[in-house]
Image: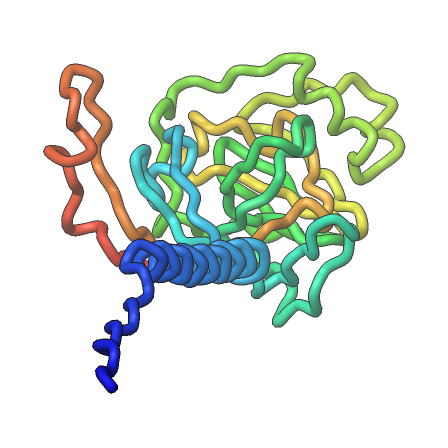
Length: 249
């Protein structure tokens, strides 16, 4: 009896195998991307964030075009959405360079030097900072770009409420950029000044910074270039190589 020839078993369609491979690849890629995004958000929220210096208010220490890595954990990073902070490693100290939310518009971040702690009595005489009655030596980081000018105005009027004596509060108070105070820093607040004392919008003009607005402390300059409006690729052609990796002090 003749036997019918065996029919070869049909292989699994190559198309189905290919589609399955693509699907598994896309799934693994999406999973890796999601994990990377989550890690990035966690690092940005709690550990380190990058900031760029847009103005010359800290010249002497930081330059326009500097990009900073800021340690957000040191003062206690804020936990998103619940308005709580992680435990701080330490509180801000006198002369720390600090990144904070601007009290007049918390959507904007400023970087200045902390010169007044809660309870400090501070003043300025002819451009010299006086803290608790002692003139401060700040030559290492302070610069004066307009040493002959000393503008005044009602923008300094907020200081009257914090002057040391009632007599001074009742008297006519004429503060200027380089001559003001003495005023007392209230509890849970700080007084901030730019290192470029003649070109800085700082606490002299808009008041104290609440401790709840403090974001972190700059660690180092990870990139820097000299902005030049006449050059399209100034961020590549005007790199300040000597500043890369420089610590912020």
